[in-house]
Amino acid sequence: MVWSISHAEPLYLKEERLVVYRDDQHVIECYAWRTRKRLWSYSVGASNVWIEGAIERGGRFYWVSYDIGTRTDVLCLSMADGKLLAERAFDGSRAFMPACDGPLVFFGCDHWMHALDARTLQRKWACYDAGNVSPMRVGGWVVTQGYGHWVTAVSVAQQRATWRHSALRGSAHNLTKGRGGSLLVVEALEDPPVLAGIDVATGKIAWRNWLSVSRYGNEHTTAGCGRFVYATGINARAYKQKKELGGFYCLEGATGRLRWRYERHQLQ
Image (cartoon, rainbow, N blue to C red; front, side):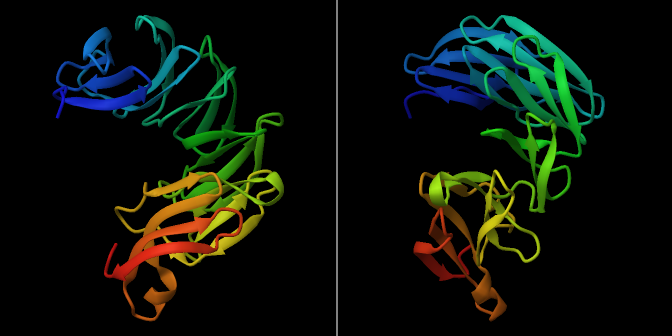
Protein backbone atom coordinates (compact mmCIF):
# COMPACT_ATOMS: atom_id res chain seq x y z
CA MET A 1 0.00 0.00 0.00
CA VAL A 2 1.36 3.42 -0.98
CA TRP A 3 -1.00 5.52 1.13
CA SER A 4 -4.58 5.63 2.39
CA ILE A 5 -7.21 8.06 3.68
CA SER A 6 -9.09 7.00 6.78
CA HIS A 7 -12.91 7.05 6.90
CA ALA A 8 -13.02 7.92 3.19
CA GLU A 9 -15.58 6.90 0.58
CA PRO A 10 -14.34 7.38 -3.01
CA LEU A 11 -16.58 9.56 -5.19
CA TYR A 12 -14.47 10.33 -8.26
CA LEU A 13 -11.14 9.39 -9.82
CA LYS A 14 -9.80 10.64 -13.15
CA GLU A 15 -6.26 11.41 -14.25
CA GLU A 16 -4.58 13.15 -11.30
CA ARG A 17 -7.70 13.97 -9.26
CA LEU A 18 -9.27 11.90 -6.50
CA VAL A 19 -12.39 13.10 -4.67
CA VAL A 20 -13.58 11.40 -1.48
CA TYR A 21 -16.19 11.88 1.22
CA ARG A 22 -14.77 11.82 4.78
CA ASP A 23 -17.60 10.53 6.96
CA ASP A 24 -15.68 11.21 10.17
CA GLN A 25 -15.36 14.94 9.38
CA HIS A 26 -18.39 15.28 7.04
CA VAL A 27 -16.36 16.91 4.29
CA ILE A 28 -15.68 16.30 0.61
CA GLU A 29 -11.97 16.46 -0.18
CA CYS A 30 -10.07 16.59 -3.46
CA TYR A 31 -6.52 15.20 -3.70
CA ALA A 32 -3.72 14.99 -6.22
CA TRP A 33 -3.57 11.26 -5.63
CA ARG A 34 0.02 10.67 -6.74
CA THR A 35 1.36 13.01 -4.06
CA ARG A 36 -1.58 12.86 -1.62
CA LYS A 37 -1.65 16.65 -1.61
CA ARG A 38 -5.06 17.94 -0.57
CA LEU A 39 -6.25 20.52 -3.10
CA TRP A 40 -9.52 21.60 -1.49
CA SER A 41 -12.17 20.67 1.05
CA TYR A 42 -15.91 21.35 1.20
CA SER A 43 -17.98 20.94 4.38
CA VAL A 44 -21.16 18.92 3.95
CA GLY A 45 -22.51 19.99 7.31
CA ALA A 46 -24.93 17.71 9.15
CA SER A 47 -23.82 14.22 10.12
CA ASN A 48 -27.07 12.62 8.89
CA VAL A 49 -26.41 13.56 5.24
CA TRP A 50 -25.97 10.70 2.79
CA ILE A 51 -23.89 11.16 -0.37
CA GLU A 52 -25.39 9.37 -3.38
CA GLY A 53 -22.65 9.56 -5.99
CA ALA A 54 -20.94 12.29 -8.01
CA ILE A 55 -19.83 13.13 -11.55
CA GLU A 56 -17.62 15.72 -13.26
CA ARG A 57 -18.24 17.56 -16.51
CA GLY A 58 -16.32 20.52 -17.90
CA GLY A 59 -14.53 21.34 -14.64
CA ARG A 60 -17.77 21.24 -12.64
CA PHE A 61 -18.27 18.62 -9.92
CA TYR A 62 -21.91 17.57 -9.37
CA TRP A 63 -23.07 15.53 -6.42
CA VAL A 64 -26.33 14.55 -4.74
CA SER A 65 -27.00 14.31 -1.02
CA TYR A 66 -30.08 13.80 1.10
CA ASP A 67 -31.17 14.19 4.70
CA ILE A 68 -33.06 11.02 5.57
CA GLY A 69 -36.79 11.60 5.20
CA THR A 70 -36.56 15.36 4.68
CA ARG A 71 -34.92 16.80 1.57
CA THR A 72 -32.53 16.19 -1.29
CA ASP A 73 -29.82 18.58 -2.55
CA VAL A 74 -28.02 18.75 -5.88
CA LEU A 75 -24.79 20.75 -5.66
CA CYS A 76 -22.15 21.90 -8.12
CA LEU A 77 -18.59 22.69 -7.05
CA SER A 78 -15.65 24.04 -9.00
CA MET A 79 -13.25 21.20 -9.66
CA ALA A 80 -10.37 23.70 -9.51
CA ASP A 81 -10.89 25.06 -5.99
CA GLY A 82 -14.01 23.42 -4.48
CA LYS A 83 -16.08 26.62 -4.41
CA LEU A 84 -19.86 26.24 -4.50
CA LEU A 85 -21.17 27.26 -7.93
CA ALA A 86 -24.83 26.27 -7.68
CA GLU A 87 -27.23 24.45 -5.37
CA ARG A 88 -30.78 23.20 -5.70
CA ALA A 89 -33.01 21.66 -3.00
CA PHE A 90 -35.88 19.23 -3.57
CA ASP A 91 -38.50 17.73 -1.31
CA GLY A 92 -38.00 13.99 -1.31
CA SER A 93 -36.90 11.07 0.76
CA ARG A 94 -34.04 9.89 -1.42
CA ALA A 95 -32.17 10.61 -4.65
CA PHE A 96 -29.47 8.90 -6.69
CA MET A 97 -26.37 9.57 -8.80
CA PRO A 98 -26.83 12.23 -11.50
CA ALA A 99 -25.74 12.33 -15.15
CA CYS A 100 -24.71 15.31 -17.30
CA ASP A 101 -24.66 15.73 -21.09
CA GLY A 102 -23.17 19.25 -21.04
CA PRO A 103 -26.15 21.62 -20.99
CA LEU A 104 -28.37 19.47 -18.71
CA VAL A 105 -28.00 17.51 -15.48
CA PHE A 106 -30.37 14.56 -15.01
CA PHE A 107 -31.21 13.00 -11.68
CA GLY A 108 -34.06 11.14 -10.02
CA CYS A 109 -35.81 11.88 -6.75
CA ASP A 110 -38.75 9.79 -5.55
CA HIS A 111 -41.06 9.31 -8.57
CA TRP A 112 -39.57 12.15 -10.64
CA MET A 113 -36.75 12.33 -13.18
CA HIS A 114 -35.53 15.96 -13.34
CA ALA A 115 -33.62 17.80 -16.06
CA LEU A 116 -31.66 20.77 -14.61
CA ASP A 117 -29.68 23.56 -16.20
CA ALA A 118 -26.05 22.49 -15.81
CA ARG A 119 -24.85 25.97 -14.79
CA THR A 120 -27.64 27.17 -12.50
CA LEU A 121 -29.28 23.85 -11.50
CA GLN A 122 -32.66 25.42 -12.16
CA ARG A 123 -35.22 22.86 -13.26
CA LYS A 124 -35.91 22.92 -17.02
CA TRP A 125 -38.43 20.06 -17.06
CA ALA A 126 -39.34 16.86 -15.25
CA CYS A 127 -41.03 13.57 -16.05
CA TYR A 128 -43.17 11.64 -13.56
CA ASP A 129 -42.53 7.90 -13.08
CA ALA A 130 -39.81 7.98 -15.73
CA GLY A 131 -37.18 6.37 -13.50
CA ASN A 132 -35.00 7.75 -10.72
CA VAL A 133 -31.91 5.50 -10.71
CA SER A 134 -28.76 5.58 -12.89
CA PRO A 135 -29.76 7.95 -15.73
CA MET A 136 -27.73 7.59 -18.96
CA ARG A 137 -27.90 10.11 -21.82
CA VAL A 138 -27.79 8.04 -25.03
CA GLY A 139 -28.41 9.92 -28.27
CA GLY A 140 -31.76 11.68 -27.94
CA TRP A 141 -32.83 9.69 -24.89
CA VAL A 142 -32.22 9.41 -21.18
CA VAL A 143 -32.39 5.76 -20.09
CA THR A 144 -33.16 5.20 -16.42
CA GLN A 145 -34.12 2.50 -13.95
CA GLY A 146 -36.87 2.76 -11.31
CA TYR A 147 -39.11 3.92 -9.65
CA GLY A 148 -40.09 0.27 -9.27
CA HIS A 149 -38.45 -2.50 -11.25
CA TRP A 150 -38.52 -0.80 -14.66
CA VAL A 151 -36.17 0.48 -17.33
CA THR A 152 -37.50 3.54 -19.16
CA ALA A 153 -36.33 5.70 -22.07
CA VAL A 154 -37.26 9.41 -21.98
CA SER A 155 -37.09 11.48 -25.16
CA VAL A 156 -35.22 14.70 -24.38
CA ALA A 157 -36.90 16.50 -27.27
CA GLN A 158 -40.42 15.36 -26.32
CA GLN A 159 -39.75 15.38 -22.56
CA ARG A 160 -41.75 12.18 -22.07
CA ALA A 161 -41.23 8.44 -21.82
CA THR A 162 -41.20 6.63 -25.16
CA TRP A 163 -40.75 3.00 -24.04
CA ARG A 164 -40.55 0.89 -20.90
CA HIS A 165 -39.77 -2.71 -19.90
CA SER A 166 -40.04 -4.60 -16.65
CA ALA A 167 -36.43 -4.94 -15.42
CA LEU A 168 -34.71 -5.31 -12.07
CA ARG A 169 -33.57 -2.01 -10.60
CA GLY A 170 -29.91 -2.13 -9.58
CA SER A 171 -29.00 -4.96 -11.99
CA ALA A 172 -27.09 -4.69 -15.29
CA HIS A 173 -27.86 -1.32 -17.03
CA ASN A 174 -24.94 -1.14 -19.44
CA LEU A 175 -24.45 -0.08 -23.06
CA THR A 176 -23.16 -2.20 -25.91
CA LYS A 177 -23.02 -2.01 -29.71
CA GLY A 178 -25.88 -3.55 -31.67
CA ARG A 179 -26.31 -4.33 -35.37
CA GLY A 180 -25.97 -1.59 -37.97
CA GLY A 181 -24.45 0.94 -35.59
CA SER A 182 -27.33 0.84 -33.11
CA LEU A 183 -26.84 1.07 -29.36
CA LEU A 184 -28.34 -1.43 -26.94
CA VAL A 185 -28.91 -1.11 -23.22
CA VAL A 186 -28.38 -4.40 -21.38
CA GLU A 187 -30.93 -5.10 -18.64
CA ALA A 188 -31.97 -7.95 -16.34
CA LEU A 189 -35.59 -8.61 -17.30
CA GLU A 190 -37.99 -9.82 -14.63
CA ASP A 191 -40.29 -12.24 -16.45
CA PRO A 192 -38.65 -14.44 -17.52
CA PRO A 193 -35.47 -13.62 -15.50
CA VAL A 194 -32.98 -13.30 -18.36
CA LEU A 195 -30.38 -10.83 -19.56
CA ALA A 196 -31.56 -8.82 -22.58
CA GLY A 197 -30.27 -6.27 -25.08
CA ILE A 198 -32.80 -3.50 -25.81
CA ASP A 199 -32.51 -1.06 -28.73
CA VAL A 200 -32.31 2.39 -27.16
CA ALA A 201 -33.97 4.14 -30.11
CA THR A 202 -36.97 1.81 -30.51
CA GLY A 203 -37.31 -0.09 -27.23
CA LYS A 204 -37.39 -3.39 -29.13
CA ILE A 205 -35.67 -6.35 -27.51
CA ALA A 206 -32.81 -7.35 -29.80
CA TRP A 207 -31.85 -10.50 -27.89
CA ARG A 208 -32.40 -12.52 -24.74
CA ASN A 209 -29.85 -14.70 -22.99
CA TRP A 210 -30.37 -17.46 -20.39
CA LEU A 211 -27.99 -15.72 -17.99
CA SER A 212 -29.58 -14.50 -14.76
CA VAL A 213 -27.76 -11.70 -12.92
CA SER A 214 -30.49 -10.82 -10.44
CA ARG A 215 -29.33 -12.76 -7.39
CA TYR A 216 -28.10 -10.81 -4.38
CA GLY A 217 -24.46 -9.84 -4.80
CA ASN A 218 -24.50 -9.85 -8.62
CA GLU A 219 -26.32 -6.54 -9.12
CA HIS A 220 -23.32 -4.46 -10.15
CA THR A 221 -21.13 -7.07 -11.84
CA THR A 222 -22.24 -6.57 -15.46
CA ALA A 223 -20.25 -4.40 -17.87
CA GLY A 224 -20.57 -3.37 -21.51
CA CYS A 225 -17.30 -2.95 -23.40
CA GLY A 226 -17.62 -2.12 -27.09
CA ARG A 227 -18.81 -5.27 -28.88
CA PHE A 228 -18.93 -7.43 -25.76
CA VAL A 229 -20.88 -7.76 -22.51
CA TYR A 230 -19.25 -9.25 -19.41
CA ALA A 231 -21.32 -10.56 -16.52
CA THR A 232 -21.32 -12.78 -13.47
CA GLY A 233 -24.49 -14.75 -12.87
CA ILE A 234 -26.42 -17.99 -12.83
CA ASN A 235 -27.04 -20.34 -15.75
CA ALA A 236 -30.85 -20.13 -15.75
CA ARG A 237 -31.30 -23.10 -18.10
CA ALA A 238 -29.23 -25.33 -15.85
CA TYR A 239 -31.07 -23.98 -12.77
CA LYS A 240 -34.39 -25.19 -14.20
CA GLN A 241 -32.83 -28.63 -14.54
CA LYS A 242 -31.87 -28.58 -10.82
CA LYS A 243 -28.23 -27.89 -11.70
CA GLU A 244 -26.62 -24.99 -9.85
CA LEU A 245 -24.13 -23.61 -12.36
CA GLY A 246 -22.74 -20.10 -12.26
CA GLY A 247 -19.69 -18.13 -13.23
CA PHE A 248 -18.23 -15.39 -15.42
CA TYR A 249 -19.54 -14.95 -18.96
CA CYS A 250 -18.67 -13.02 -22.11
CA LEU A 251 -21.50 -12.35 -24.60
CA GLU A 252 -21.52 -10.76 -28.04
CA GLY A 253 -23.16 -7.37 -27.62
CA ALA A 254 -25.08 -7.39 -30.91
CA THR A 255 -26.58 -10.87 -30.57
CA GLY A 256 -26.29 -11.93 -26.92
CA ARG A 257 -24.58 -15.14 -27.99
CA LEU A 258 -22.13 -16.71 -25.61
CA ARG A 259 -18.52 -16.03 -26.61
CA TRP A 260 -16.83 -17.79 -23.69
CA ARG A 261 -17.47 -18.64 -20.07
CA TYR A 262 -15.86 -19.74 -16.83
CA GLU A 263 -18.53 -21.86 -15.16
CA ARG A 264 -18.55 -24.06 -12.06
CA HIS A 265 -21.02 -25.92 -9.85
CA GLN A 266 -22.59 -23.66 -7.16
CA LEU A 267 -20.45 -20.69 -8.22
CA GLN A 268 -22.49 -17.53 -7.75
